[in-house]
Image 1 (tube, rainbow, N blue to C red):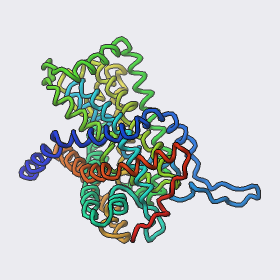
Image 2 (cartoon, one colour):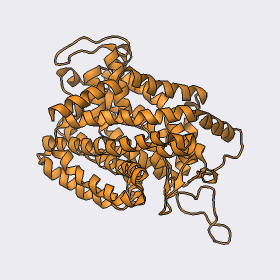
Image 3 (cartoon, rainbow, N blue to C red):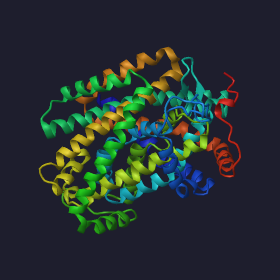
Length: 471
């Protein structure tokens, strides 16, 4: 285990080095500029489209018969596609990831999380546009898409190896970021707060998640469409209650974020101090871990949306980054920084829990533990679908059930495993997923820009299904 940990640590140092920061931020900035800041300017339009996309039921004409709409292709509503993507992103990254970024990079890391989110909106938009544009229909009649398909169908078969690499990394990464990390974090929280044994937590999550995962994307989307809005709003309300209690410290918290984004912070109390580079590195890394912009995971869910218009789904998809990081992560960060607990050397979910408890003594811990459990549960659901589609790309439709079973069985193993190694594995494969996706986004950016221009100038945007995929 020590040898494997050392090897992963060495790889992690390379893939999360300056090159990755340049790639993630560079591609995001390039897309944001190429789109003329459209994702930021059209944020309101995105929310409007999301609200309109709640209903997946077929439209009927005056005679009561179903009317075929341009939005009828796909398995789940545009709203539920976003909720499925959010189910995978709103997870431990919003609770433990933000706390880890602050513990290792100081308050300035929050600023770099915000920057990652703002440029990541353009990245997430482009991912979803390409996912719908280049998706296919598999042998079971379901729509499949994502980076592996826009690499294959957008860049051509000579780039098929790059799609294969993404799928390989994605299928494995799902067991880390989307499975074992989640069950481990929940098990820790349940043990510390309620005294529930790690193995029991793992078994309970396995049973509940298995009942949903084995039902496929429609069941996952249905559960995500109900749970994600409820859990997200409840967590934000709890965070706002803490901020009302700590209202006098909010201004100072923002001051810390902006000042230490560009200045090193000295050690104090149990806090070890952090250089500016640490703030940037951990802010970007945990920001990406949280909102997944650039990883290529979310477009796999958006490819199943009931829409033929890639740009409309892109406008909905970009909201995932905004909601996840600008809203939910910011709430967590302000809760932590308006308390003094972050100076005591704590990290991870326990730092967030102690910060909530400092303002809401007696039940702050319970709020975080319950939120973490629900967040992690939905993340496991979303990532099971991502990993499944990557596995399907590599081994065919018949392999789907095998992957689902293996994924479900891994949940209790994660609950009792060593957290440090799991976080390292998740972090490493995150970055390795991102590299093929970012290359494809850069090469296919002219397609994104053209489709976006056509959409906003009122021209017809051809559905991806009309393209010759040369199967």
